[in-house]
Length: 197
Ligand code: ADP
Figure (cartoon, rainbow, N blue to C red):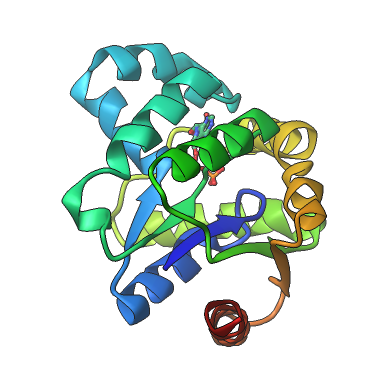
């Protein structure tokens, strides 16, 4: 099963992706996690991405497309994967279609978590508080100023993906303002419809 999870920062993609992974024995590919790992390891990609990520902007399409293209060929992707944080621009979505086509792979579903923008800042602040309380490390881009930039990048560059996928009949929208379990249940419903379709 191959799935894309769409939604703004703070929509709950990471939480839901973890649950889908556990249930369907596929793996989660988060370009944010991959880029953070590259920054930490100080690779060439990491050096290019660091400042952009800290400002809340988007890393160049070439870089992320390159990372994803290599990653989905790894043996652990054989059973399928859930893409979280990719694609983030229409150019990335077009590149992904091309990549999958070349590799003879197809997408089973594009799931968008639809949330009320006003709730997102509060969710991020809550995530920071919980992480600190648990003694964890807070992401450098989880602060009000950078978060605002990330939301702006989302609205300008990523939100258009909804119509990109809707046009080809691939988009499934879910109410992301429900409780975590209700959102999971809705996603599972959509996935079983898509796979049996
Ligand atoms: P969130 O979904 O919470 O906004 P992510 O962990 O997905 O955060 O991404 C963090 C940062 O990594 C983004 O703000 C951006 O700078 C960079 N990034 C992640 N994925 C992509 C992508 N597909 N294209 C461009 N930049 C990306």
